[in-house]
Length: 132
Length: 304
Image: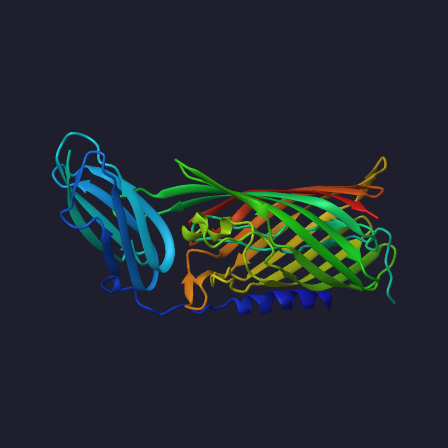
């Protein structure tokens, strides 16, 4: 009798776990909105300056993270590459970068936001300059 | 007729708070109480559990390598039993959690007092005699959000809420435990179910079922009573919700783990101690990305 009780509890518990409600929103990269507050396009920075990066990502459903990448447009060298996992429908991105060196550069800052684990994502970029 | 034997052995397993996060292996599951002698005695004790998980997560971004990290969870808890009457027993636990998340380049640590829990059991003794006995315990309890849980912490923002000592949620537990003994050998079957609720941030960890079968043999050496034991344990968890109100189901969490367990308990007078090792023998957790590496559990109790 007691064994039937324990077994019955097991089966009931497994039955409760048979299905879970899930948000049925289909991932749609077109619904991702990325807004850069800083740096502004075509801004020129000089030696000793700090580049403040501020952006907001919003989406109709849950996002899974973003990648922030800074690249030298002429050489393709990646100067900064950060990936963060985050689960929300709104993400605030804050970062700083200090330019160094004596070479003039055209820099492309890209923000890639991902909404699922299959890689559906949106990307936005802003270009600025470094004059040592 | 309700009757206890002096050497009636009862195995109890209660799952404490379960914490999890997306593909980071931060799963902390319950610590069984072990086989307790002399059912009518109160006791207090200290328990310890250490578990490890390894995670491999493909990057979401092109050109980036897979992410590898390890998670280590240590729980040290003050726990005890209060015998209310011949038919009712109350168990409680206050855990201290230490979690460490390591990657190739960084390590993050969180520590603090976890969520307090309490379970009330009704003892139902079956028929038996001096050589053969069986007992059934049925109980229910809850886990309270007393542990430290800060939604502003970086680990929470990075999708690792399971790193925090507390869950921020009220959870409810139901368990049943059956033990049968014939002379010096015995077996125990245990099942426990944890029904979770969302916390203030709408994070809801998956409901969890644990079940175990344990075989033991009891024999004396000098003034000690030894109980070597071996068996199996299964843990099954549903997916977590990153946001329960929006039904954001995190399908990278949840799954099952099956362990082979081997251990020993020893009792002398009013002192009892226990050491058990568990190795995973079958598992599929976190969509196959999280791999349990094993657990070790120990405890010391003082009966009075």
